[in-house]
Image 1 (cartoon, one colour):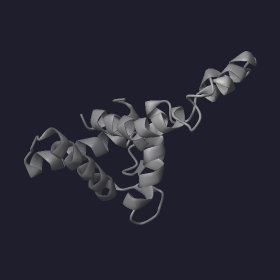
Image 2 (cartoon, rainbow, N blue to C red):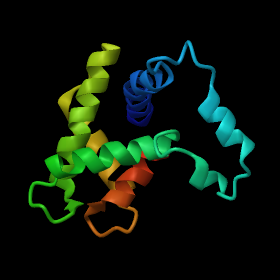
Image 3 (cartoon, rainbow, N blue to C red):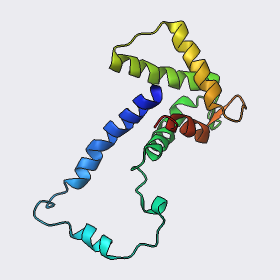
Length: 141
């Protein structure tokens, strides 16, 4: 559920930016010449290379993790211990509960955060790295 909420948040945050790109000044008076020129040229890029970084949910999750990770990495070691990870997940869970109007007892939320840490810590190092966090959060996307 938190992954779905994160995905919805990412897509909601991305849609105004996508709309702004589509509605550039003069776009209504000038037909899509840049896209026509781009489509006329053969592409040698692979599909992954030709896709903009923010077009996939996983890339959006990665962007959010990159920007928010330092705020939760209290000791600055580049990884999240269980306390740091739980603080982030509890913040996300609280946002989700506010958005859905759902309430859970504190012990259930803590148990959920502990389970999330166990799942996210794929290499069982008792630390969650950025790639592990991105994989965990992207799995529901």
